[in-house]
Amino acid sequence: MKISRELLKEILAIAKESYPNEFIALLSGKKDLIEELVFLPFMAGERSALIHLDMLPLGVKVHGTVHSHPSPCCEPSDEDFFLFTRYGKYHIIVCYPFTMNNWKCYNYKGEEIELEVV
Image (tube, rainbow, N blue to C red; front, top):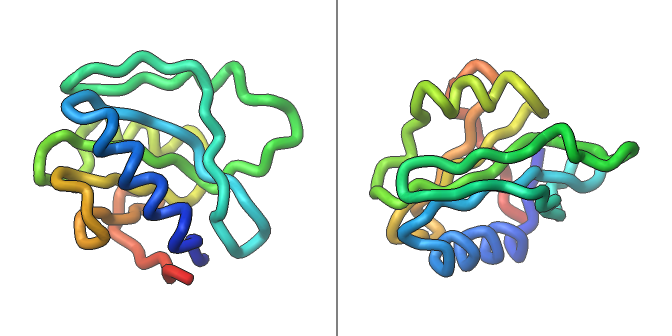
Protein backbone atom coordinates (compact mmCIF):
# COMPACT_ATOMS: atom_id res chain seq x y z
CA MET A 1 0.00 0.00 0.00
CA LYS A 2 1.10 3.57 -0.69
CA ILE A 3 0.25 6.97 0.74
CA SER A 4 0.38 10.29 -1.06
CA ARG A 5 3.20 12.54 0.19
CA GLU A 6 0.81 15.50 -0.02
CA LEU A 7 -1.74 13.73 2.16
CA LEU A 8 0.92 12.83 4.73
CA LYS A 9 2.00 16.49 4.85
CA GLU A 10 -1.64 17.51 5.29
CA ILE A 11 -2.07 15.01 8.14
CA LEU A 12 1.01 16.38 9.91
CA ALA A 13 -0.22 19.97 9.44
CA ILE A 14 -3.63 19.10 10.91
CA ALA A 15 -1.92 17.43 13.87
CA LYS A 16 0.19 20.55 14.49
CA GLU A 17 -2.88 22.76 14.28
CA SER A 18 -4.82 20.49 16.67
CA TYR A 19 -1.98 20.26 19.21
CA PRO A 20 -2.18 19.74 22.19
CA ASN A 21 -5.43 17.95 21.36
CA GLU A 22 -5.59 14.79 19.29
CA PHE A 23 -7.37 14.59 15.96
CA ILE A 24 -8.75 11.54 14.18
CA ALA A 25 -9.93 10.80 10.63
CA LEU A 26 -10.44 7.90 8.26
CA LEU A 27 -8.07 7.07 5.39
CA SER A 28 -9.56 6.61 1.93
CA GLY A 29 -8.47 6.51 -1.70
CA LYS A 30 -7.96 4.14 -4.58
CA LYS A 31 -7.28 0.42 -4.43
CA ASP A 32 -3.55 0.72 -3.62
CA LEU A 33 -3.17 4.42 -2.76
CA ILE A 34 -4.29 6.31 0.32
CA GLU A 35 -4.92 9.85 -0.88
CA GLU A 36 -7.93 11.21 1.01
CA LEU A 37 -9.11 11.90 4.53
CA VAL A 38 -12.69 11.38 5.61
CA PHE A 39 -13.68 13.47 8.60
CA LEU A 40 -16.58 12.38 10.74
CA PRO A 41 -17.84 14.11 13.87
CA PHE A 42 -15.44 13.42 16.71
CA MET A 43 -14.62 14.51 20.23
CA ALA A 44 -10.99 15.31 20.99
CA GLY A 45 -8.94 16.08 24.03
CA GLU A 46 -5.35 15.99 25.16
CA ARG A 47 -5.52 12.26 25.93
CA SER A 48 -7.88 10.81 23.33
CA ALA A 49 -10.05 11.28 20.27
CA LEU A 50 -13.31 9.44 19.72
CA ILE A 51 -14.76 9.18 16.21
CA HIS A 52 -18.42 8.48 15.46
CA LEU A 53 -18.00 5.63 12.96
CA ASP A 54 -21.76 5.12 12.77
CA MET A 55 -21.94 8.31 10.68
CA LEU A 56 -19.78 6.95 7.82
CA PRO A 57 -21.48 7.60 4.46
CA LEU A 58 -22.40 4.54 2.43
CA GLY A 59 -20.00 3.61 -0.35
CA VAL A 60 -16.88 5.23 1.12
CA LYS A 61 -13.80 2.99 0.74
CA VAL A 62 -12.05 3.01 4.12
CA HIS A 63 -8.42 1.86 4.16
CA GLY A 64 -8.01 2.62 7.86
CA THR A 65 -7.60 5.41 10.38
CA VAL A 66 -5.20 8.19 11.27
CA HIS A 67 -4.85 10.04 14.54
CA SER A 68 -2.34 12.13 16.42
CA HIS A 69 -0.57 11.71 19.72
CA PRO A 70 0.43 14.97 21.43
CA SER A 71 3.46 13.20 22.93
CA PRO A 72 6.62 12.14 21.05
CA CYS A 73 5.46 8.49 21.22
CA CYS A 74 3.83 6.90 18.16
CA GLU A 75 3.23 3.59 19.94
CA PRO A 76 -0.44 2.51 20.07
CA SER A 77 -2.39 2.59 23.32
CA ASP A 78 -4.95 -0.01 24.41
CA GLU A 79 -7.69 2.26 23.01
CA ASP A 80 -5.78 2.44 19.71
CA PHE A 81 -5.69 -1.37 19.45
CA PHE A 82 -9.47 -1.41 19.82
CA LEU A 83 -9.84 1.23 17.07
CA PHE A 84 -7.55 -0.74 14.75
CA THR A 85 -9.95 -3.70 14.80
CA ARG A 86 -12.94 -1.58 13.72
CA TYR A 87 -12.17 -0.23 10.23
CA GLY A 88 -9.56 -0.93 7.59
CA LYS A 89 -6.12 -2.48 7.39
CA TYR A 90 -3.88 0.57 7.81
CA HIS A 91 -3.68 2.76 10.89
CA ILE A 92 -1.37 5.75 11.06
CA ILE A 93 -0.30 7.47 14.27
CA VAL A 94 1.50 10.80 13.97
CA CYS A 95 3.25 12.17 17.04
CA TYR A 96 4.81 15.38 18.31
CA PRO A 97 6.61 17.32 16.84
CA PHE A 98 4.73 16.18 13.71
CA THR A 99 7.52 16.05 11.12
CA MET A 100 7.93 13.58 8.25
CA ASN A 101 9.92 11.41 10.69
CA ASN A 102 7.21 11.34 13.37
CA TRP A 103 4.68 8.80 12.17
CA LYS A 104 4.16 5.05 12.04
CA CYS A 105 1.66 2.75 10.41
CA TYR A 106 0.15 -0.36 11.99
CA ASN A 107 -2.04 -3.21 10.83
CA TYR A 108 -5.28 -4.20 12.55
CA LYS A 109 -3.28 -6.37 15.00
CA GLY A 110 -1.14 -3.40 16.09
CA GLU A 111 1.96 -4.64 14.29
CA GLU A 112 4.10 -1.95 12.67
CA ILE A 113 3.98 -2.05 8.87
CA GLU A 114 5.45 0.07 6.08
CA LEU A 115 3.59 2.41 3.77
CA GLU A 116 5.39 3.65 0.70
CA VAL A 117 5.26 7.45 0.42
CA VAL A 118 4.74 8.51 -3.21
